[in-house]
Length: 165
Image (cartoon, rainbow, N blue to C red):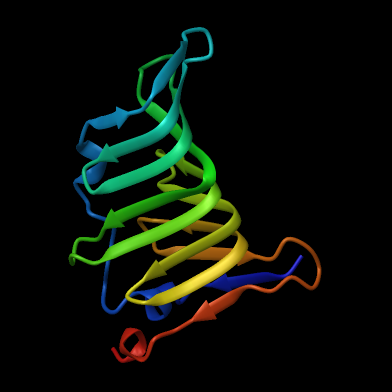
């Protein structure tokens, strides 16, 4: 499996220090969909049909979203999004937009990590990373992108304005 560690992610996608909007985690989550199915035993709610999720500046759009809550305290553990292309966007504290898309999105709230699988793409400021799987730790700005099999490549486009600082 081709693995590309991008520890200098700030140089690749971000011009300046751009952390995810720090108030997002404290905001309520709003979800609109065509239907909703609650499984109280598994603490999962499945939303289907043109699902639009919003929490502060975070937006997830997908055909299907599954929200898993902690059975002990009711906090949200994970948000999963599925679709032809499920999308994720979030503003950073300096007003820039981080945008990702893939067929599968997994956002683990406690770890503040977004994992995008199958036709994954993450962009900011016209710089783009594409791969089969992208894992992005939002708060620390660390990213790992992989190809699916040996020989698959990770593709990155860096725009000059994103690397000047």
